Image 1: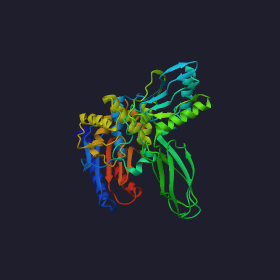
Image 2: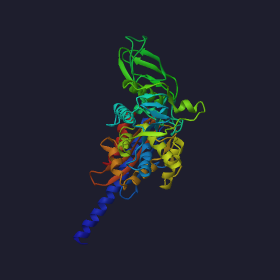
Image 3: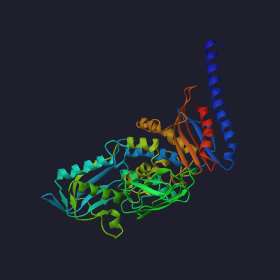
Image 4: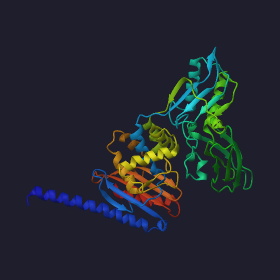
Length: 470
């Protein structure tokens, strides 16, 4: 055998041995995890593929369907990139009906939304509440509107009446990460509640500040003070459209804390703030603040824009996806789902959007048995997916022209580019890793349900498996 043949044979044997080593080491670390006390009653779905060939490197119950939590966001993000486009923008329109004469609008000032989840968001320069205020006042000034003899109508009816997907837990919906998605969203549909525990256990808890102040809803305080060494066990309950929101649980004595909850009625909230802006400019309105829900509940037609004043676009899709994946903003996922439903079926509902996403992935070879979606964000524990399906989705994304945006948006955990997922009893990761030893790129998904104990004690054990890919 010649020198070059010997070298080639050595390289082939080395590559083969390393491949076997990766598979065997993954298997060894997986078994070590399964033998751990935290996994005694848990379920695991784990799948690793070669990013270049798509071939399976290792799998443990890769076809088992489990709740994926926020790793499900990859399915929504990829489908949105493909079907809406990386430069897609949501829009919000402002206009009026009736007539405008000598600066007096005899009719309704109307703001119509198409589900922009960034309207008034603090995350994007140029789209914050103060920026929205400036844009709207400029539009009215350009039109010469100095008074409104009619109502201010906030029309959220282009999206479905129900802002919250089915299957979301009641104790999630009142918290910031459980904010519903309306046709008009405002400040990411969030409000901050600051409170102080009593000086000792059993004393009253004082609410110091609600920012922004809730409009059209009363906040009922049912908090109690626990010992100074206790943790914050407060929970907000704010149902969509409800005139009553309440906060209950216990907080440590003497501590000042802030929790962020979801607004019960963002369209109405925005309407009241808009009226305040008009007052500042001495633009007076004789009518009331009305949302589309006010008309729908009375079986009346929602007033529509006859004369358009302006259109306010959102940031482009790839900028929104950055926060959707990097910060795991559930609201953005629900907005993407409804936008897909509206584009494909003229129906801005969760059900329509999810059916569009499911059809998209079914056409890409991910069967209904591999992926069940209730929402666009992964918050519902009724979602399930298998790790093999997540790997297929990540493999699909690699050669797309928008992949750079998708990849950059993935968070970094344990030195690895991967989306995380966390809900009660579920911890998951899905992403990409390049081996420092061979330069090979791997695509992986690991999902655990019903583990025992604290997630923070589970994480090092999951990372130990994924470290094999480094």
